[in-house]
Image 1 (cartoon, rainbow, N blue to C red):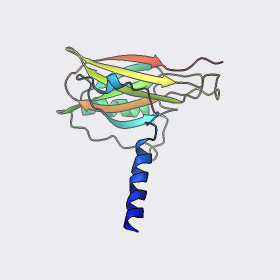
Image 2 (cartoon, rainbow, N blue to C red):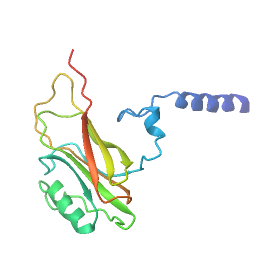
Image 3 (cartoon, rainbow, N blue to C red):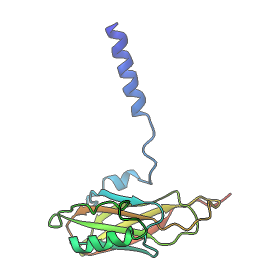
Image 4 (tube, helix red, strand yellow):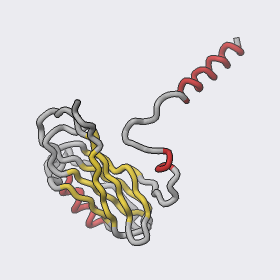
Amino acid sequence: MKTRFAAMIIGIFGLTSCTPPDSTGPKSPAELTVPDRLPFQDIYSLQSFSGMDTKRGRIITDSAALRAAWDSVFVNYAVGQKPFVPAIDFKQNVVLLASGGQTPTQLLWFRITMVRERPEHLAVLVESEWPPCGGVPVTTTPVHIVTVPRVATQAVFTFVDNTKTCS
C-alpha cells in the first residue's frame, strides 16, 4: 500500500513538472537570466475602462504622485468601487505605470513584462496582444501598475504589440 501511494505521489509530481509554463507573456530562456533584469511586483492591472486615454509610461517616485495617478486611473469609478491607494515605501521602491491608451477592440492582454536597469534609467518593456482577426468592437483603456526596487528615478518605456496576423 505504501509503495502504491509513493508511486502515485511521484507520478503526480512528474505530471506537474511537464505542464506548460504560464502563457501570460513571452519569455525566452535568455530573458530569465539577464543580470540587469529587475524583479517587479504587480500592484494593479486593469484591462479596460481606466481613466488613462493616452498610451504612455510613467515612473512614480513619491506618494503624492501615486495618489494623483491613482485618481486618474480610477476616475470612472464610484467612490465605493475605487480600490485604495497601496502603501509603497518610496525610499526602497518606485512605481511604474503603463497605459495602453484608447484601443479599438477588446485586448487579450496588456502588461509590463520586463524591467531592466540601465546606467541612467529603467528600461521598461510593455507588451500587448489583440485578437488576430478582430474582436469585440469596444474602446478599452488598459493600465498595468507595478513596483520595482528604487535604482533609478527615470524610465524609458517600450511598447510592443504581439498580435499575430490574421490568416
